[in-house]
Amino acid sequence: MRIVFDLNRCLGYAQCIPLAPDVLKLNGEEAVMYDPNPDDSQRQGVLRAAASCPVQAIMVDFADNGKETKS
Amino acid sequence: MSTSALVADAVSSFKANGRIVIVGASLAGLRAAEALRDEGFAGKLTLIGDEKREPYDRPPLSKQVLKGWVPADHTMLPRSREIDAEWHLGIAATGLDRKTKNVRLANGDLIPYDRLLIATGVRSRPWFNKEEAKLKGLFTIRTSDDAEALQKALAAKPKRVLIIGAGFIGSEMASVCRELKLEVTVAERADAPLIGALGGVIGKIAAEMQRDHGVDLRTGVSVEKLEGDAAGHVRRAKLSDGTTLDVDVVVASLGSLRNVEWLEGAGLATGFWGVGCDAGCRAFDINGVVTDSIFVAGDIARAPHVLYEYQFMSAEHWDNAVIGARVAAHNMVSLEPDRRPHLLVPQFWSGQFGVNIKGTGVQSFGDEVVITQGSVKERRFAAAYGKRGRIVGAVTFNHGKWLEYYTALIEKSAPFPPPSPGYDVPTDTKPVPAEFPDVRAPTELPTVVLTGHDPTDRGAAFAPARRR
Image (tube, rainbow over all chains, first blue to last red; front, side, top):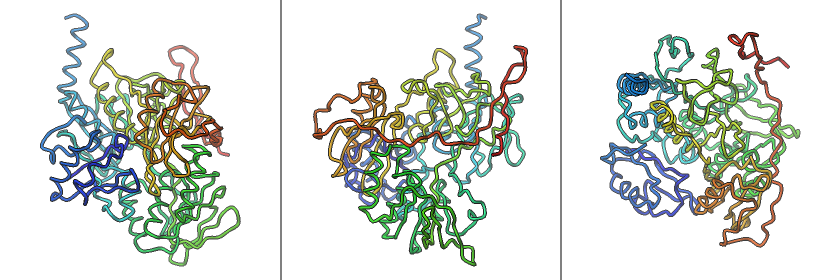
């Protein structure tokens, strides 16, 4: 699957990280590091992480998300 | 039919049957294509890109990819929707004929357009010595292929890595080297890392971060010569201070060059600065007259910015590509008064040495800086930049939650020094000179000359740069 973080928007709340710990990591106090093309087996966790983001900084491919979004 | 009805008819006919060509198939090109479909463009859409890979994200390349955590071909960008486009990947555009409205490809094919989007971005500046540039073990980083090759070289545990240039990407790579427990020297011609973007005051803090993490940072020096062994692999670097370093991997991180060469002879306002355009992303021709059918987005675009005395500015930032592409797409299928301006307060981020650096506004437009929040010692602070009594930019180190606060001040052209945020305010909040280096360095500018006498044939032309 494919994701991208808008790291301008990301404020480092880090709520996403425990929901997909193999895909998302915190580097230091507030910098998120992530795997942009995680394995499909990570889908549930990644979708939950995206939904949990208070500033909606995680974009998921429409094919993985089941819905089109405004680009 | 009234004129307005005719125009409305022409717009809907274009949206149904027009041809739009996007040159540049990276972040800006992809997001523009998606936005065009969102806007209801149902005609023929063509994307041209010189790299074989489909659009991918570049920021992870100098971070998680180099570290070896994410493979270089695993940064493909998510799509927001189907775009039903014709793709020409792995083949560069080599020319533009505005009279016949065709883009020429490297294989000689001509792609006709009604409207064109230029999004060819930048490439990394190559090592200046062409012979030395052929040495094995010398890298630049911009593409996923670059990152793949450099990652392999770092994974082979070189004895010492030399990074030439301590901008954001050079500094990020130095950070990765230390995370990989590699010995790394950073050679920077200026007096501190990040100085061009953030000035000397903040640059000094960045220098301390590097040294605290074991980087052998050398400032005020340039690398004059690279030497290889019999097999053509780089082994030594000679510095301007007379020292010689034994190195196995060298990364030239010298900034970028804009990909404008394919537009030579097209009569647009192109040069080392990129492609000049208005705030609505419409390209200027060489005379500074706005074109109707050519648009520009991403790193290559250079437009006047209302917040910065209408100076022409470009921003090699991720959000500039995404948001600029959206504005360009909208304006490509709209007429005035429905056209929108691309009025971005530029933002960036950089992760290095465990610190999240974020910026908003144009720091280098300022001439003073003040620490407004937090503690420099703890590497957790915010700083604001000002010029002539108003705030023009800000930067945060591990203090990103406050970035929006400063963006709002910049948007309002708030006074500088800015009003106290009333939280986590340091004792000393006196502005100091920001210490930006003099940017008036000599460049090999092509000269623009005026030609013709009669009003009908008066115009501008590029004269080749004079050899020095």
